[in-house]
Image (cartoon, rainbow, N blue to C red):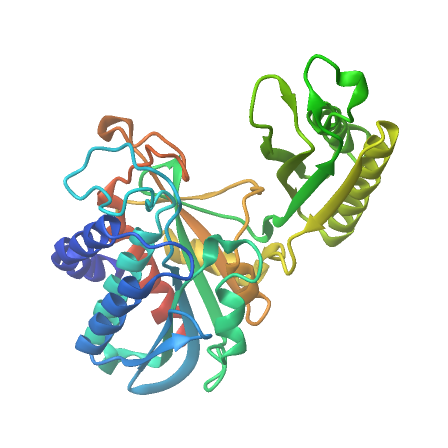
Length: 396
């Protein structure tokens, strides 16, 4: 079907897509706790006559399989389901009822858009060549093992083997209705670290009798920033950020320990390994200089770089340009991270963005903000893009 005809059909089911999104937004669930969300997804897929398997990967993953009436390729489409530990500050009729948990990254919209795409593809299964697999994935926000890897290990990319795989993410910084994509390395590998600095506590009036872990932490934070400016090639995309520090209980007590949490973001394996090595070296040197001991741990099994197949991405760009009411742009690399990268290691594909920034609707805050808000008018565009990619690549 033409993009224009599909756009008319998407418009008809747009209220259902929006209603699903609002329901999920009102009932957000944290990583590996997506029980209700997965149940909603499975029930909806079954209503559409799509084959469903639940509890994929020992968690709440859901796999839907739609077989077309003609021979063709196998396409995987993925939506992530988990929310964030954020207190929502947006006053909406469907504001989160789970205090301290919020869909601040748009995963509620991802699920709603993919379910909308599934509805339209199921409606036209007699015209569909090949097979479409729908991956509803938990635990994207985990950062380590995540949710994609357990689903892949459970076999979702096989039987039948996926030929192409696609994922879509709502982005608060890009204008509403714009698709953004980039061929090649697109998103970073995230390596989280925890540093415990072990000193010797005492009274705040006699610091010379202590080994002050807060002072050592301050020196270490400054020194870690020097890695990006003096130890790593400055033309390499690279970020290191200390995002949390915990220490002390009272204004006149120097504590025994301090704990730092941070992240390293890199775009290639060479820089990634060098950065981790430099963090370990700088931590050791600073702590030894001030007589402190330390424990350094990197989160195991962090996501790889998200790499979009160049040939596939060029074709995706041409397909997205046919969607009425949207605009398609090539965008720069981002040091955000995604475990959709795991799927892209198993089959060629593309991960792309859909902007939702709309100042007229106060949709101006970035993902992960407590004030993040989505322009729901873009949901039909995202659903339509998934339909088009499934149709085009199954028949390729």
